[in-house]
Length: 492
Image 1 (spheres, rainbow, N blue to C red):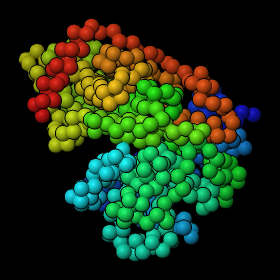
Image 2: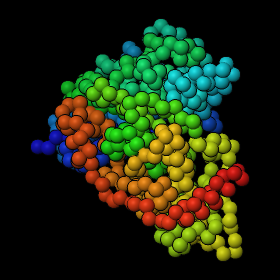
Image 3: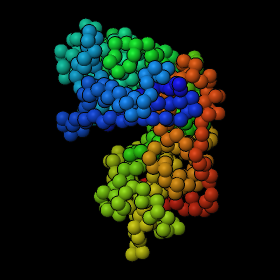
Image 4: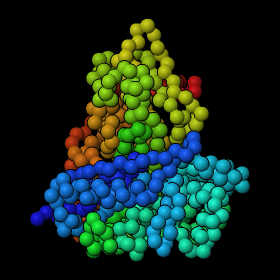
């Protein structure tokens, strides 16, 4: 009877559970979606009970569909949407309010107030983050400013706070364990990046009482065991946790400094392993803990392109140039180059390293000879060029170019995009056989804790590449394209 790690990938719109075997392959997976709530423009909420119900349902239906039994599960790993904020009652575990999702912008006035107090640089240097509603700390501040009742109950020790990892562990252990892993804690604005501990001088401006916070723990150890559940037996160790992007970096076996991954989804998330010391970016990139394993902490630089796959969706849904997203590759391959067309997909502003939040998308270089194929190719180039800029910023921050770029996400299946990416960054681009790298990372962390795998060397040896894209284009091609791109960026 084969043993498995059960990986819980708790995402923004659904919860996916996967069974990972010793061969690092995903043997089965199942997803259950849950509702999103938008009480006001810019506000996004989840009901934590619905998140929990989706995890429970996904596990039950996974077992039912596969015939695999819970007795074959030797450990549970968790990865999660990182900054989403949950408050719950310590007495019974019930949510004290809806979860405020990472996308929610309601705490913008809190951030503005902290900036007016001259605190932005302090938070930047201590946490590696910027003062932005994206992160958990200001979401808590907003909750306590809006509800004197919640603030009082928090101060009196009746409430617990956590990101989704903490909430799930609390529920899985029957309320016995209140922990958060160091990668998730590093996304709250409340943990010192060097000491890896909650810091009073970070908590005080946010008016967050220390008593509601979870214990910060490594990314791979046994935190507790399942207890009192109707869908899993008692005694299964919960043994690995990491935020979704850090888990993907681990799942891609990027264990050495200079190794990086890019997840091509709606946007593109790039993380690069920078080793055992935090490094603060000159280009506005974020610094986070990647993971803590075996007493050693690894850090990562992170950059995001807000629009990646969403640009292809816009061609499909907004312009009607293609019927399915997968069609863009064949359309773009109908022309040898972009014909002078440049698409800057700043449909929701430009992030690092340009930081033009009010930017709008721009298509330039149109002529009577422009075709749908030129626009399709320019769209793929626009995605790859944003990633190029982020990776060049990372190389400048580190003082040396990185090595291989590993890729995942839906758009990573596009061979032309991956070749363009390799040509632009001048580095190999490696696509894995197992594309569910986020869940794979959580499983790997849990498996290491319980001895399912011996060490990261064994994991690196087991990681399987599906295809590697090597740089092929002439340098004159990339120089011309980068010149076109920079000229377009300067016009925004």
